Image 1: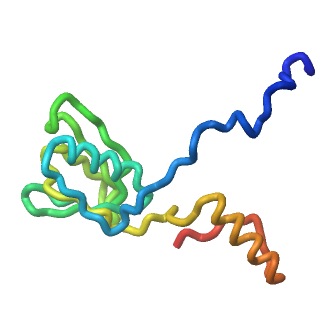
Image 2 (image 1 turned 180 degrees about the horizontal axis):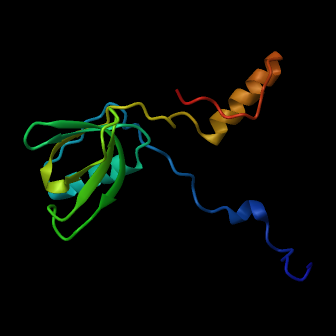
Length: 139
């Protein structure tokens, strides 16, 4: 097995990819002036860990978790799928039907980085509190 390991490699130097930083989208309402603006905003909504509110061209609104998007050749062929907050059946909405988007729900993973967790853990340990390795309740 020792022939497999290269003694010249330092594992700390192998990590060359910077960590991913999530932007603060909660409460924002992106401008959807162009097709590219719409596509980018819906891609961000897909990556968002909270609910969004989509306003359709007819004025109706759907609030829920955007869990899927399918990019077609045109906006009419492309769609997003949402789990509505009110528990009603899943909804598919063509990109061409989206008039506005708001990041309306709380980002459930905001501030939940590994570094934040370790900092809280050691703060509790330092004050004598019980510090557990159990995950926090997201509600």
